[in-house]
Length: 253
Image 1 (cartoon, rainbow, N blue to C red):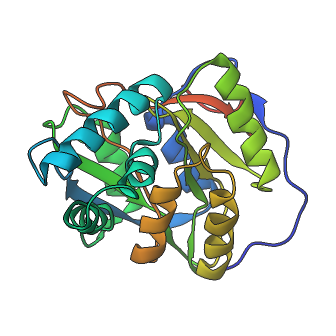
Image 2: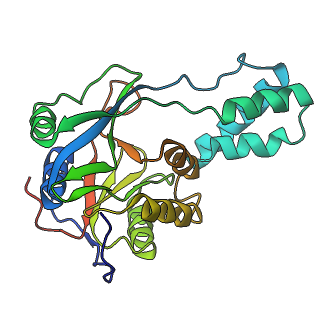
């Protein structure tokens, strides 16, 4: 299933905050979803000092300082400084950077998913557990991919504006923009073919570091997109909050 070419809709800030329990059922109902797919994953451990080489430890410390100052770009900073490291350190870092953590999607009828969502089944998980929604959606007319984007820029009032402008610049004509805890997630309200999704991911990477280009690369490897919908007791303790959409004022809370 592919989308028709229409001008992008106007994104508007929401007057009343809503969360995923409100947004996802509306989104899935709007596109006629019959079945969705969830990815249950254990988040890999972060790269720490002591994992590789003493030289790598120094680079990791410096990259973390820069990351804390900016809120994004840990791996970019690390790879930039790794250019001047010894061969053993470079090879160890490159091997770690290209690791891909994958899990098979689990198909779920949309009714069961919405029921579980409203019961809080995906909230308050243990620290390393994560549940993501796949972009691949089945409808009565076939299957397609919901447009998805993962941002890097830390959320703030001014960053809200640029996140909305990113959605407009990429011609995402409809959907929902949410604060994801530290940054933003975007979910479109229509379906694309996989080829169209590849095009979106490629263009989105041109907007790095606003868009998480490493996330985009992992989606291309998987051949579907996925965004976290769960919360946990450590890294992501708060649920997503809607800040803008093309349905502003229409979301039921």
